[in-house]
Amino acid sequence: MNQNINRRDFLKRLGIGASVTGLALAGCDVNNARKTSPEQKNGEMTYRTNPTTGDKVSLLGYGCMRWPTKTEKTADGNSEEIIDQDAVNDLVDHALANGVNYFDTAPPYCRGLSEKATGTALARHPRESYYLATKMSNHRLAGNGLSPQELYDASVKMYRKSFEDLQTDYFDYYLLHIVGGGSGMPLLMERFFDNGLLDFLLEERKAGRIRNLGFSYHGDVKVFDYLLSRHDEFKWDFVQIQLNYVDFRHASGMNFNAEYLYGELDKLGIPAIVMEPLLGGRLTSLTEHLNGRLKQRRPDDSIASWAFRFAGSFPNVLTVLSGMTYMEHLQDNISTYSPLEPCDDEEMKLLEDTAQIMIRYQSVPCTSCQYCMPCPYGINIPGIFSHYNKCINEGNVPASSQSPEYRKARRAFLIGYDRSVPRLRQASHCIGCGQCLSHCPQSIDIPTQMQRIDNFVEQLKQNTL
Image (cartoon, rainbow, N blue to C red; front, side, top):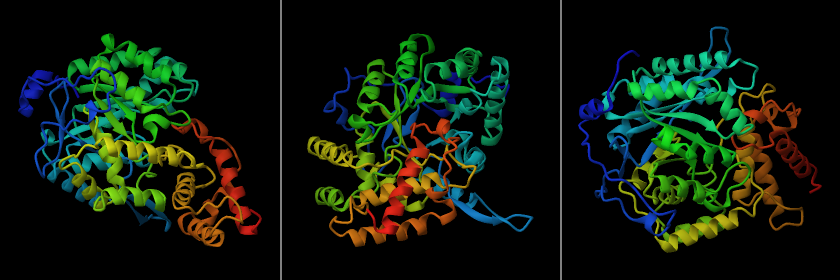
């Protein structure tokens, strides 16, 4: 922790040259944005160069929010879900062996267990073989009546704990986590400005314990614009945004169109890191009709690969994060980016048309981030939303009992609901306490959605739709 790592010395240690090529476009030109990276080589991972540090970063980044779990018996005879460390190790080993070198975690991920599991897996490899990203996740500490000094002390304690859990003495990428959420500007000021925490992190960057400093944006675009307006002062090294072919021009709720977000970053030459390229998994499988259109164009490619190719088609994107729980997901994404084949004009038009069709459905903009969990009443909030959205995509949410194939859709919804969400954890048990509301980065009115879904389920059960 006390080691002073000079940036130039660090880069020499990594063997990275000092000269870099800046990525500069005038605004968000989608045609120019699809030029193939000159660093691509047939059969090898596509890499992008960070203009600040010269880091050669894999276009596929590993999001460590959804590590695989297993059930373990506790001393009192009960069972609990823990991270399957052996499976995590296998995934990390395979990722590194196939060119993935960016790993993104945060203190709250996997119920607070992600950093330790990620650190354990990565510590088995040379530190210079990967880039490590984590976050200042003090959003849950704020708003609880802490004084500025108390919030600062608790935040610094979280920062130092990340070093311990990740078994490192420097972070390659460090983020102000979930800026723009909650009350927007007042919450930003409380978390980072009023208490001097941002000044502390800027000093940590100078000392080399943080090599790249940025922020992840969710919510109020005024916060995004404000932080960029002070770029000359703070010199952001990167910014993480939600970008996919639906949110690019059709963002909903507290999300903001990624076309604007990416364009503003591109103007300033700030690399973008992409989160939620699959929109919480909703772009892995669409309706049968939409799947068929994509398969007709590229029959050998997975549906998910379209979303990853879209996100990677913009040259100012440094890496695209994916929370890969299973080996087959990791292998498919590696294949998509080894090398990247950017979307052409016709494919961009097809994806825009797909997005327009998708937004006609009343899906819930849940990304399964798990920030709302655990629910004090045991409700599986992400599981309920995931099943509901899946049924919408599969055409199993009938508008009425007169809808075509109503009986088939009704059966698929109800049986699938009981299989994916235990009855004691279903929406009918939500009492509307609202404790989850402040934790949702998508600003979903969770109690209202629970009531809506429960009413729909009861209508299906009673055949009164």
